Image 1 (spheres, helix red, strand yellow):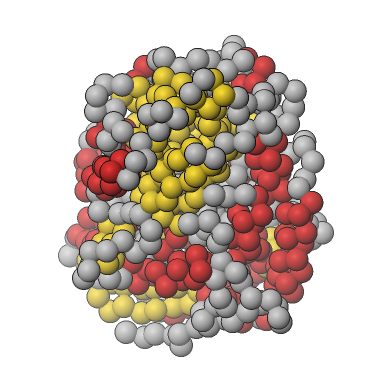
Image 2 (tube, helix red, strand yellow):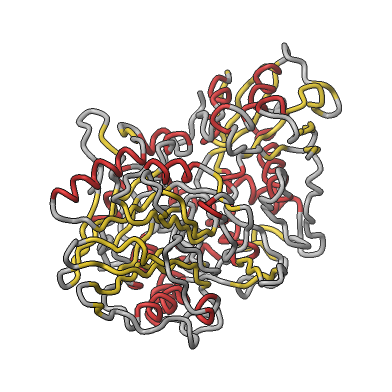
Length: 605
């Protein structure tokens, strides 16, 4: 195998550069209508709370999830949420940005002396350049500033491995890239990062603290943090080396009982696993017993100890506040606030001082929009400006020109941006081996749209290095492998079967590869085998094909084990560099690139 010199992601980047609607349990009381969709800080958005009601006090929990280092307002569809009006019509609302998120959370806390701010994972990882270039130190500092109290791990907290996760918790300079400003040392997270179901393979002990207890003037609430058991399937093998990931519900049950033995009866689980609601609107109705919510979190919620008072979830980047019965059949809220800091979830409930528990019937929840028509938090603006200054020599360099938005539209199996990236990787692969036949790109590796409107001073249509980084931030390499036609067909079937049957992962394909995806069928049969063509010719099961994939897929990631069985491997260059080279060579200010037609996969519904 040909391998490039080992360099840190930052070193590679610098080298290249030098070149809602309220949903509650059946017994919960509804919030005032004026509060449901009001911008944070607007009249009626948050009433004064914190009152005592005899032996109970009001408790507030605020939550975000899947922030992914989006310190600046995310662009394109990544920076909007869908609001559904009572008449069924919808509108898109611009939302997100750490400066606005800090303001929203601070406004929400006013009048709430018993308030906790939490997040169930993926606060870092797959981040835009402003954070990713510096190994997400800027995001940890932003979370400290906006008052984060507890974070559970997600799969992306393992992108750079366990040692780097510990550094984000404890602080210190990066072991390869050092400190980024003379005399300034990264201090780490002021909040605990929990990983109850991530254990050392040899010792069985949790990698990080499994839970924490938040104490507020006699009020004690336990928080348990878990990530999805399937994390090893969606993270590079090196990132989870030596670790074992346990069942989510069983782990939560174990520590719920441990907390109870310590006299902590109020328990909230931070679960980095999620679901998909029937509607994409942030204030959509989940239906009776969460019947309009699907995905792994439904089963987890139904199995998780009834002593847990709410499940705050993430991973799917979807918004929902649903009521799902616990093992006793009692209603319990399960929530998620979409992603990228566009929403936050507000939970309000009563804490009983005598029973030291949350009054389940009192729990209310709603997703709130992080509107951009409010004041920015000045301290977050200063923090962002500091890191922008350090990133500026890299961030603003033009790498290409586009004539329109090129989107990673996840409402359909194939996207224009997915096609563009696959074409770029095939071009890169043919520079390594002229016999390269095709490229496949995992949709989860595409993190944002390429947006025509300028994000800074570069001008409309200009793609900057920072924008390219936001699209592909993982520092993967473009690898070549040889598959038989039979193996290639098996890879395509793995998109909709095996580990991916419940939630299909449709690979983005390079120009020349076409096939039909029949969604009326089930399992692997959804790939119509005799429709698969390469440059118009049927795939020959006994022939050999040279296939380009990123290094994550080459290791069998995302539920594609057959890709790891290829032969004659060849490791190429950085995937972002491949995209950069493709855009630079194929576009100019006078001849920008348009969006591919996204017509390589024919879908039957």
